[in-house]
Length: 418
Image 1 (tube, one colour):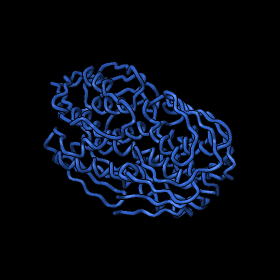
Image 2 (tube, rainbow, N blue to C red):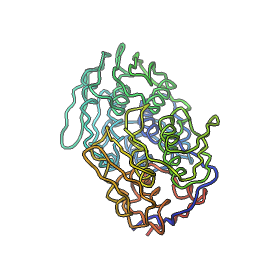
Image 3 (spheres, rainbow, N blue to C red):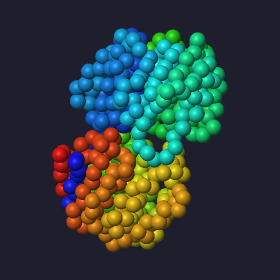
């Protein structure tokens, strides 16, 4: 069984580099199949398992994909299928971006229902609403989403709830719709802006990404381009919390501090010293932290993807903390693992009430999903003794070389591959 063996209690010091944003890359790579001329050369792609899945899916459609470390080149001019049905499609949530991309390019798409982390019900009704408003007929047959249209026509679409996935997916389809499309009540996350910038680099006409209203003027074709993915806000936030939890001084490089403001604000409130330096941020912590209250919200609020690492950080902070998970209803599964290590956490519906303890103790724990896996690693770093973390496939979906990066700061983590 693959596992991480963590010897806890070591402060973290030094420099760490943040990789490209997972949530941007898993949408940008499917977007590249919309280029009917030229090739897309995309830099700063994180080397994680979700990216390997996306590349295999794109290749199965007929695209040519070449990888060189963090650089991925995609020639989609020879794509000959709109049917994404290989096993990898069901392994990750972001495979649903293929629906918007294929529908835009071919006016047809057949994509197996996506998989991903079990953190609650994540319907795609807002995606379907958007596709149908553009003129597509959408059905679900034999576990696959099938979308077809004689043509796509721009229109006004108001999302009933703020949805990152629906905002990106409908934006993709609307790029090739006739006339103007206006999307309202859009999500504002940085990776939405990154996807829009990538599409514009290929020749799309998208304005307003990053606000709650996005305007798209349809175009007839997209061409290949050169592009570099933004730094990963969630990876950076995870290492900020690890540094705060372990104590020491860590310089986190290749970040956009603006994207981290909600995280920095909470850490400062807890007693962490934070300094911004252009494209880097320095975390200095004495580990004498106090509890705070946190509520997850759409960007620019506190990210739901960092709720689990934050819960771990708060488990040893002085006093009581309350974490309100307002995005997903099943994102406290990691709490049972923290309790094995001595944490005092009581979950009531979407609230976690945390009574800070003096320390955690090492135990055998499980990564229940991607971000819970990061939370378990942080728990192991601050615990007394040895911690074993299993289900590493979750962690590897979103964190490139996590043990090597942390070990470079003074952590003691060993990966067992058997």
